[in-house]
Image 1 (cartoon, rainbow, N blue to C red):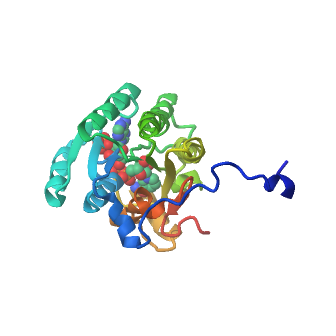
Image 2 (cartoon, rainbow, N blue to C red):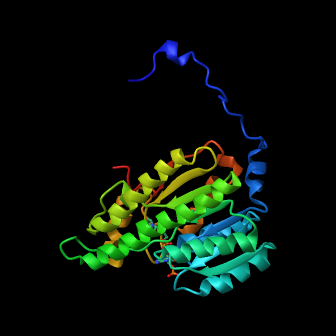
Amino acid sequence: MSMGFAECAVVREGFPRPVPDTPSNVLEQFKSMRGKVVVVTGAADGIGYAVSEAMAEASANVALWYNSNDAAIAKAHGLAKAHGIKTYAYKVDISNPQQVQDTIARVVSDFGKIDVFVANAGMAISKPILDQTLEEYRKQMSVNVGGVVACAKYAGEVFKRQGSGNLIITSSMSAHIVNVPTDQPIYNGTKAFVTHFGKSLAREWREFARVNIVSPGFFDTKMGASPSALNEAYRMAVLGRQGNVKEIKGLYLYLASDASTYTTGADILIDGGYTLP
Ligand SMILES: NC(=O)c1ccc[n+]([C@@H]2O[C@H](COP(=O)([O-])OP(=O)(O)OC[C@H]3O[C@@H](n4cnc5c(N)ncnc54)[C@H](OP(=O)(O)O)[C@@H]3O)[C@@H](O)[C@H]2O)c1
């Protein structure tokens, strides 16, 4: 049962908590990224590389994690050179919890801390359940769920030790809607898991870290709309097209920076209006 006015009148020690000592000028709030250390998974291409670029452009140091696409190594060098920041590329299969734990320790040893962890990597084997093998189900679970859980668990340990941290999870509009015409119930289910997992962590970690979720609609990447679904993607999105990854950079920068100090547990759709109807 919720509290009545008498119980509400009891003052809880330590509340209200202090407002963070951040600048009131919003552009100064974004400048808070200077010197921060940001880890991005799935950073070699697509949304993850755009996020890495955004962080570098805002003068943060970036740890770019990749799995199979070693273009991340040259891209990390390019960002360091272009923006005068520190970057490293790390090869990590996020479905392997030991690799995740070891690499988080290496990042802390190389950079001294982790301010922001962007759990962005994901994959899809888009098939109806009646055509999907259990092996394909397990594979998607091991990356999209197991990988995000391992990243959150070991990054969270660092955040707790530091007394501060910021986790951003790339989920999907598929956590909100059932995609058409592509039946992909397992992928959709993995994204629904990480969305609610992220919200749950926002409460669990309330004393030391913020946690937010980004739910993209179709973006023009390797994981964007497949050729056979493209016309439907254009029709469903109110803006009539897929997103370009440059259009998602600002959202991650907002969530990573001191412009979002009162934002936690949020699940932000960025989908060109796809989920409106
Ligand atoms: N594009 C869209 O329309 C869309 C919509 C909603 C949500 N999303 C989500 O956005 C995220 C990024 O996708 P994207 O669109 O940018 O496509 P993408 O370029 O294909 O990115 C997916 C990334 O995940 C990484 N990855 C896959 N399996 C991995 C593993 N076992 N260990 C570590 N990394 C692994 C890949 O790394 P390597 O290439 O190095 O192997 C790749 O960089 C995904 O979580 C996806 O579900 C995308």
